[in-house]
Image 1 (tube, rainbow, N blue to C red):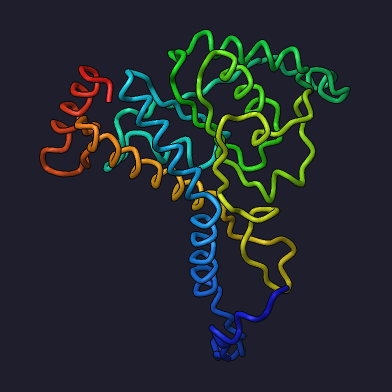
Image 2: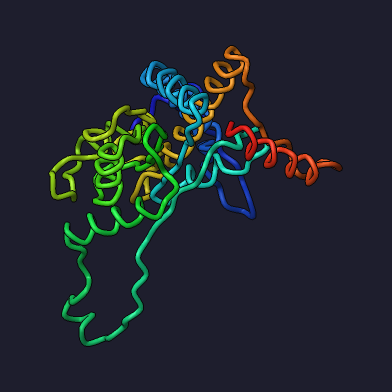
Length: 271
């Protein structure tokens, strides 16, 4: 464990209910690590973020749509229908629900594995039923980038002329074996890669007596990276004379009305 942070945040002793407690001020350390994390995100990924913003702005100006797919963490909800966010972001989710429980077969492992052929078929069906079109942008978020569906989604989307932006953790993903039949991870198959700068294993803090590291970095990094992309999109579209539709807070007195007006505006102009 790294203990150099003691010099910045010295521990102290405190007595509570007759017990002497050693206080290490981990909340303060968390913020210190978070600041470092965001600085590293900017150092590594600012060029990719600016490139992503330019491609997304170009997409919207040409009548395209930006789609967001995530494996289940922060990104899948952070950008959608948010005050201060773009109306142009479209969520994309898919799965195959099969209800067929049987304890005997479960014990034998029957039906517990998804073949590469099934992965390809599910992704193909999802894209067929989606509203994606050539020239659109698809943001794919996966911290590990190793699981079959995000990788297959990037491959098939690119084949359809959709520009793919991977949001992943390179230090983490590069050390993991791929579960996709190609042997490739998400960062190896996407058009553009934004590294959220999360460390291997994701967590930022450790403490003696706690078995696993804690406080993951990927969620904050992913959200910060994508809001930076949004800032770039707004800047470039305003420069082109076509300011994008931005949601106001629905909690304001006129919030619901403004939200509906924003939706109608987006329907008319597509950005």
